[in-house]
Length: 130
Image 1: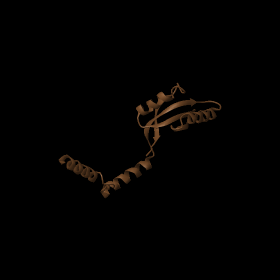
Image 2 (image 1 turned 135 degrees about the horizontal axis):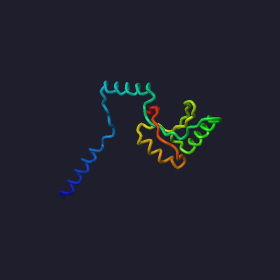
Image 3 (image 1 turned 120 degrees about the vertical axis):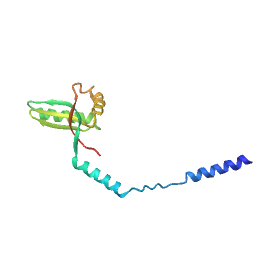
Image 4 (image 1 turned 180 degrees about the vertical axis):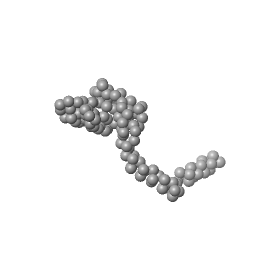
């Protein structure tokens, strides 16, 4: 009989311990202000040093059209990876990804090398993503 009462007591204690449904966070006003300032600052910066993968650099007649077509093909194959077309005389370049570290870029490079064997990692300004 004693074990029965002990079991009932433990069940009630367990139910009381897990009965709390709402969690409330009390954040100091200064912490909230700092967090908001941090987000605003990064939104103003927009671009930071990082890495991209260059899949094409082309010059000559119809190079812009070729680069745009290759960017479209890449976007269809890898829709989750952003692609960018840029021009730095005399080359049109197609670069992909927004990577904070070279290691992140390398992981994606291994995935795309089957379709782009001449692709390589380059340092670039990347778009800050919140």
